[in-house]
Amino acid sequence: MEEEYIDVHEGGREYWLQKIADHIKLRGFRYEAHGDNIRIILERGVTIDFGSEPEGLCFYSRVMLPSGDDHDEINDYISDMSIFIKIASIMPRPVSYVVDESMSDYKILNMKRCFKSFEEVINVIDRLYDHFSQEGRNTSE
Image 1 (cartoon, rainbow, N blue to C red):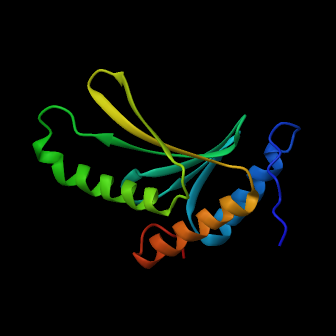
Image 2: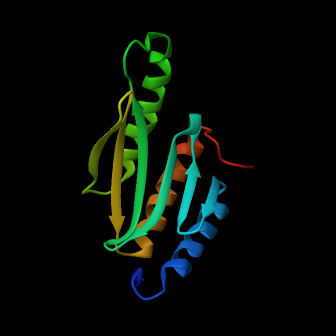
């Protein structure tokens, strides 16, 4: 099968985002689509966003890092980080990570991976579905 190139520079962005949204819907994920972005909603509010950038169609996920004396919420942080690490393990390499420290009380770890072909994106969505549906996580019936 020949790979379809994601042309985000010549008006192809909406076409590819619609194809991706259709595949996400077919797989049964809960999702939201807003303009140039698609958000897959996983367990506990952990999300995966797809959006276009000059380097292609990019995937983003983020997790809040513990801050201060959040001892009562430590299990929530562990659960969220576990989901984040599972997502990271599914992503093909290279993946980039950045800590957002723009809010003084909250630090957020961001993950980003950009794709050049539609098949790469679909493969990742399918792998996410296979992993999270086996665990019974937030796929619709």
